[in-house]
Image (cartoon, rainbow, N blue to C red; front, side, top):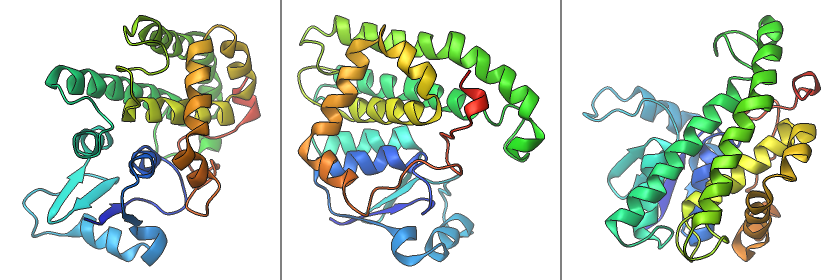
Length: 237
């Protein structure tokens, strides 16, 4: 089938986790808002007839089914495109890692919007600086250290988070490292020395043929100052 991905067209955001999975799987999909503008996405969000309304994008249409929430979409794609283990235990473990990445993502976002998304960054700069200091000093090392241990303890080797083959969790961790490197280049340069397995995973994913081709195409959206990862030098320490 041809999937339809509904997400904001100008930012990587949470939609990027889905795009990476679709690209690695070689799935046929259309990024609806980029191809047709905002109207289809807004109609979907405002549809008053659906009994299962999505809260927010990303939303994936698979046939007649609409699936929302990043981890939920990836759980579906993992089962249908061999980017997750076949066993229930393996699928649950991969989903657990994805949910941990989701927690990490929220904390990265909150460095520049610690009070709330309804305020401009300029309205919360003192709080953002304090939040970013704690994120760099404590939260980034804690999350990266966790994934470093996961890689080290994988019985199938440290090339993947789960088993001996790539999963959507690997793709998502790649996206986190890429986003953090954009937003916190100095902090990531320091942390890279202590988290070599995580950095090596990022590099391996970037070199995968389908991912490399995607990043070289016009489908790829660069990180920018409207997305979750934002480059404010004053927050990088």
